[in-house]
Length: 89
Image (cartoon, rainbow, N blue to C red):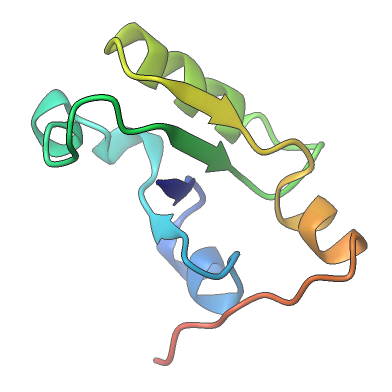
């Protein structure tokens, strides 16, 4: 499950296709239990200058969930030539 941990307004402006917007503050044990056991979470934020993905990954790991960080975040995604999806207002 690909999680964009930035705020909703940045997510709406552009996010990796298929990502769900879920900032770290909303990653409660109850919310995370909505996914099947063993779900791998991949988190990302704005880019290498942002530590939001690292904080989210640590939080998910502390909840005992499998997690990886998408290095480079949105910046890295765009730098590799991929497009972002936008959410309609």
